[in-house]
Length: 145
Image (cartoon, rainbow, N blue to C red; front, top):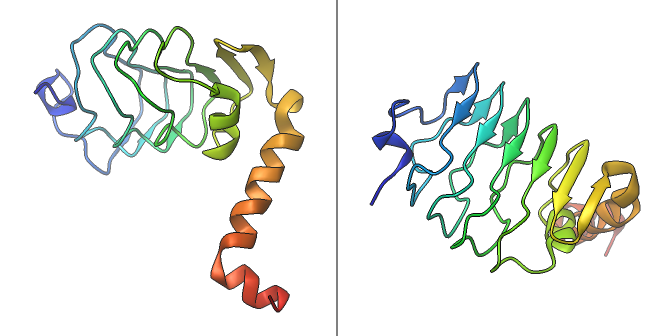
């Protein structure tokens, strides 16, 4: 299995990486050993990933998982990036719903369901965030539920 550690970047587990990482078409099957945070762009499209588990939580630039023919979900995608590209992933359905459900915040999104800005989905995004808060035990206690 080809993991992030098998690339020229090596094991960056838990680190902040300050430059771009482009592993498009590298044959990656796992993002294990990827950094926690990337200040530049992170391109991992055209790979053999089935999951985004171990993906950096924050990306200062653009994130692309385009044309990852085995990718099944947007779960574990970065929580924040500039532009989010996830089009041409045949196994990922309801991309907009997944973006809101997994709280993926970006300035602009390119999906199979269209191109949109955060402002276009903010209301739906906030509904999912509120649902998560209400489900958490601490928030229920706070509300007296």
